[in-house]
Image (cartoon, rainbow, N blue to C red; front, side):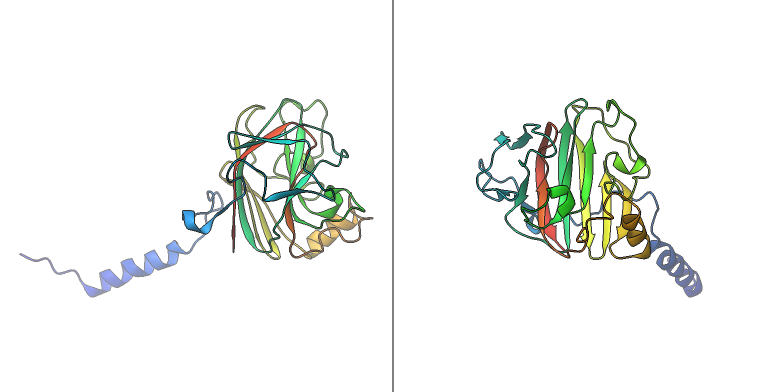
Amino acid sequence: MTKIIPVTLVFTAFSLFSCTSGKRNESETTPTNDQPETWMLLLAGSTLDQWQMYSQDSIKGWSLIDGELHASGAGWDAGEDIITKETFANFDLSLEWKVAPENSSGIFFYVQNNSDQPIYESAPEYQVMDDKGWPQQMKPNQYTAANYAMHAPVGAEVKPAGEWNTTRITVNYPHVEHWLNGVKVVEYDFGSEDWENRKASGKWADVPNYGKAKSGHIGLQNAGKVVYRNLKIREL
């Protein structure tokens, strides 16, 4: 015998589903929509033909070995940072990285290719470092996944030196999110009151154009010894 379900019960169940399905979990995992055709690979093939030096001509300090990009660890002001040839506005950037003990570096976006300033003054930075082995005490906004010298990560769990971490940076201007190992740890909005207050009272107070761009290159800093792989980006 077919069991008849009251219409009111069906409607109630549907209403509950509609109300709960739109809620956002504060511990949400890495964004989805990962169809292969939507991504541009930034380390395709055996050459770095999608990259160029920041404010220089020929690439130096970097080597591509079996699909992994190795930084030589030249130093913060060695001038051996690389940037994508293409520029991006709204995007989703995904990659993996591992760092040598007591080393640090950074991932940049909205880089302006300007020889008059170092890359870290040209663009916001997602910090990469050996948090557990770093020999000095750092400020909270200087550890891995921070918006460097601006926003400290919350709930970040970085792997020990030599182990692979996953990073995701999503930008839908003016909103930015930093992800580390599947967890969102930083979010902010360019130009917000909070942003402007942090800038005015911090490291970038005397860098007038810091954070003003709305598009630019993706950049990798050759400060410490870091290895990157599976770099990919999709435009939003």
